Length: 72
Image 1 (cartoon, rainbow, N blue to C red):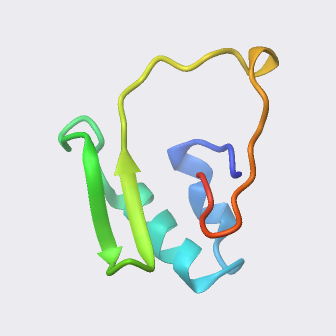
Image 2 (tube, rainbow, N blue to C red):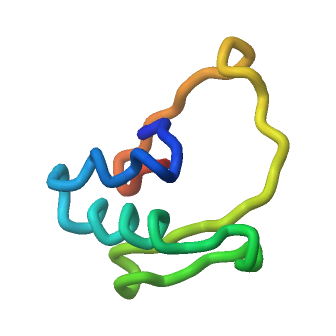
């Protein structure tokens, strides 16, 4: 899981080509003007799920891991 803000998301470029595509999408998207939902960036290989939610403080939750995808 990468925890960052939009201004620093491009600091993580170069880890994986698919991650790069997602990071560019995040960097270039105005999330105040986009609807919640799934966005296919590169077919099924790169998918962005936009979800508006109220998050919990990081000391109240556990981090999770995935084998097939990454949370950003």
